Length: 390
Image 1 (cartoon, rainbow, N blue to C red):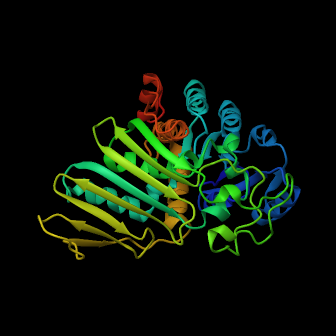
Image 2: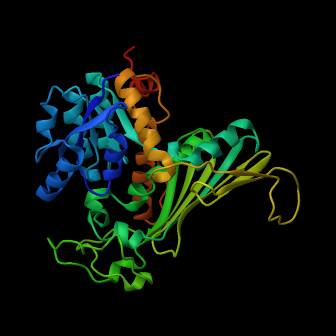
């Protein structure tokens, strides 16, 4: 089998997706890279033995490239993805799909009209802890899911999300979309429905008054190696900081499930805690990486019990995001080559963004509830049907 030739646009913090897709002799090779930074182009061109360009559109003109991986800042996804789809390249878009409902719908509509394959990188669907929770639910260990609660402790949040463009709402809409898109998607996947109505509260509680860099000032060289503690000691934040560092979201799904999500960017630890309660029990994860456990309580009633009825161990996996990056790129490469059904879904990606957009609007308007805009039926049918024209 000849390797697919992949072009990568953007080699910054999301470089791991490029590393995961580069498999010389085993299905794919990064043959070209595009980035605005000349030093990044030099280094990554050498690292992948690929040609490097500044303007991503030069990749789209290369007939020898089979697919394009888009790992640029969120506000650029729409333009690059639509250009690539019109050029006939299979497209991988790193999450989130876009920063507005309209941008997501434009990307989906472009894929629909061109017939070009579109894949969205919600890699948590391929993480061991998430797949195990889904398997437990599918087996019926807790009955029919009725409510899902998520607590997201973003311990490095001030370092990851407040020292660059993520802190600027014009680039992200907000962290209740940018950071929560993964978790909202997982809630939808575990519960078997999409958010239909949302409301939220949130605020910029800690990072709003911390020292910022001047515009056009680079980040400190060690910004992702030497984390500052306590959070109030953080320095060198992005010159624009107008996204919330605490948020609480409530969702009513279209199948009646009630879900809640909480996010905090100044906790001492970094992990996600999921609780799913069904008609016959509940599950909860303790840690979210290989070797951690998911516990199930499905007998009772009783008082507090530290020991569950069943304990499952999260399977070992190599690579970033609990092995999710490698698995999602395996699925993308198969999809780019052959088409067909995938565990990720452009419709689901759009719905997680739509929920995050409306939730952000709600929290900035004092918790006003909003309905999530529906997606056009023909787009749902097209993508749920494996991106095959009817």
